[in-house]
Amino acid sequence: MHALASTRAMPAPASQAGFSGRLAPARPPTLTPTTTTPAALVATGAATAPPLHGRRRRALYCTAAPIDQAATAAAAAQAAAASAAPPPPAAAAAQPGQPPSALLLPQLKAELRDALAGLDRGIFGAPAPCRERADLAARALEAANPTPAPLTERMDLVAGEWRLLYTTVTIAGVRKTKLGLREFVRLGAFAQRIDPSTREAVNEIGFGVSGLGAALSGALTVRATYEVVSPTRVAIAFAGASLAPSALEALFRANYDLLLSIFNPQGWLDVTYVDEELRIGRDDKGHLFVLERCGGSAGSDRGGPAAEGGA
Image (cartoon, rainbow, N blue to C red; front, side):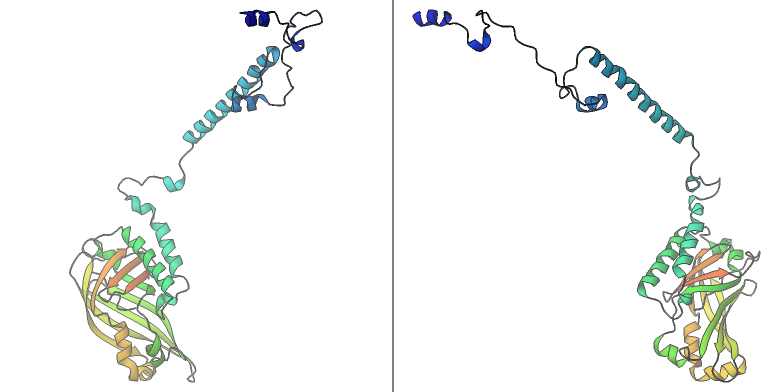
C-alpha cells in the first residue's frame, strides 16, 4: 500500500510536463509532402497510401473518377468497332453447296508448286528433305480432293493433255550413265494424252542430243490401255513403245530395255486428286506423279483416266 501511494504521488516525467508541471497536449503528427499521384494511390491501395485530409482528399476523388470513365469509354468503343468490322477474307464462309476444303485449294496448290520448284521434275532424284516436303504437300492436297470418285463420275476431268511436274521415278547412278544423261543426252518435256473413247493413254518423253555432230531431238512414245476397277483406280497394260527419229532409236538401241523399264506403266494407278488444273496419282510401285493440264480446261468427254506410266 505504501508503495502504491508513493507511486501515485510521483510527478510526471519532464518530457510530458510543462514548466508549470501540467501535462502538455500531444502534438499532431507532421505530414510529409509526397509526390505520389492519384493513379498510383488507386493502384497501391489506401492501406499503403499516405493519409490525405480536407481539400487534398476531395481533389483526389475528383481527379481519379474522370480518368476511369475515359478508359472505360475507350475500351467500349474499341469493342464495338471490332464487333462491327467485317471478317477477314480468310474467315469467309463457304458458299452453299461448296465444301469448306474448297477455300484451301488455292493455298494448298501454291504450297505444292513451291515444294516442287527447282527439282527438275524429280527425275534425277532429289535430297530426302525435298522429297519429304513434296510428298507432304501432295498429301495435303489429296486430303482436300474435290473429286472423290473421278473414274466413275468425272472422267472429263481426267481426259486431255497433261504435263509432268514431278515424279519419284528416278534415273540415277548406272542407269543415268548408260543412257548418256551425264554427258550428251538431255531430257525434254514429259507429256501425256488421254483418250477416253479408246481407253488409251500415250506418254511422250522428249530427248535432246548434242555433241555428236548435228543436234538431234526426238521422243520415246509409250502406249498403254487401262481398265477402271474402282472409282479411283485403273489397271494398266503396256501396249507398245517406239523411238523417233531412227537416229535416236539407234542411239538407245543397246539400252532400249533399260529405257522401257523406267517408263513402262504396267500395273495399277490410283487417281488421288484431280481438278481443272492438277492431277495427282500413286501407283503400285509406290511412285508419286504430279501433273499439270496443258492449256485450256477439262474436256467434256467421259471415258477414263490415263496411267502416268512413269512419266
